[in-house]
Length: 535
Picture 1 (spheres, rainbow, N blue to C red):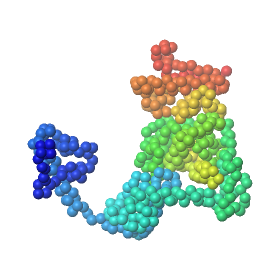
Picture 2: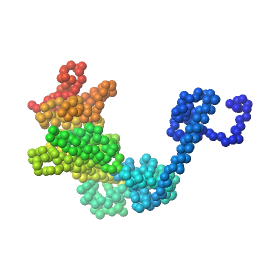
Picture 3: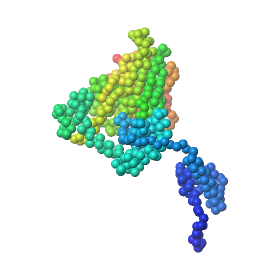
Picture 4: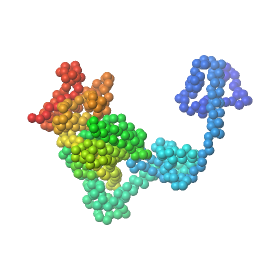
């Protein structure tokens, strides 16, 4: 403006304050630092008329006064904050949690051998501590800036790092490279007898007895194959506990949940569910997909295999042993397995056993307890081709299934009934719908006490005071939107094709749809299907 009018612009000799960098310093969370946006963020909107020189000066003065207040607060806090104590760093280590690979940390050993209480989270890129009271108190009282300086002084030059972010990245990279190069050597340390007993998935028969690490022998590629999985039946947990676990909102973001499950008017089971501490789950609830994975794992155990793989579970879920498994499905199953390996369950069925005729007045206390899937985990990387195999040796039979066996609530069906690959694609959604339908048909055919031959999409159980049926038990929430109407048609199509497959295989005689109020009027919505069986 000065140059356009031919006037030389000179700054005054007195000091000048630029309110823009001050605003960025005092109000770092603003999206915009335009004059009007800063004023409105400070609740000063409506006081000034913008694009007027005098008003703009007034607005700038208002901003400056607010900035002065902010600086005064910072100075006051500087003098009022309690003095942090200086902790002594003994040593540090880079760790990857074997059961939760996303937990990647630089753990510190400080003061009197306090290890792991305070750590640098490599993934989230900040300092943190364990969740117990002692760790939080320690974290609050220590001068973390000084502790960080000690860590960088000790390890910064070794890993060429000037910040914790760079230190974490470089240290983790070196650790992974070392683990990768030594994976085969560590694997060879396991004796051949232990391999055959605990790792049957590796069909290594030409491995020389007495082979040591220094020989660096390569395993013949044609021996690196999984044995064939054979199963004639599939098994599904039919207990009320399993249904409630997979359909009710049981959140495990906290460490503990207790359920009171009424089996009938006289029997009440107490079920405690909790996860391991300091473990991050892929999801903080138990889903119908998780229950299907548990059913598949139990089916494999019943076939005589005491070691599981995600590939095997995928084949059991689909019912097609020859199905080609995608990486996405394998990853989803592994996430489910790794979650279920960290969730404990304790079933207190003392009340139920005191009610049963064969155990009444004989047992005062009876509890089943285990992880939902009590599995170990082994990862092997072949040196010859870099192929990775992840296997899960079975530690014990899951408590939820030992309980189901005791009360005779395991549904078994011929395995070929679940092979529907000729009718439709085995998506995760289709697998859950198919398994629900087949399980319900098995209940109808084998148990006349149900007093119903219907597979219902939605009905209200007055005794339990809850919604039942395929929709609520698989997590669907009906509404009046077009997307739900399309989804409902898709679900109905899968149910219908599954029933047709069961009819073609002779599992049922026939089926027919039923509508609201049992009318034949096609204008009324389909509520489910009636199943007919027998001669």
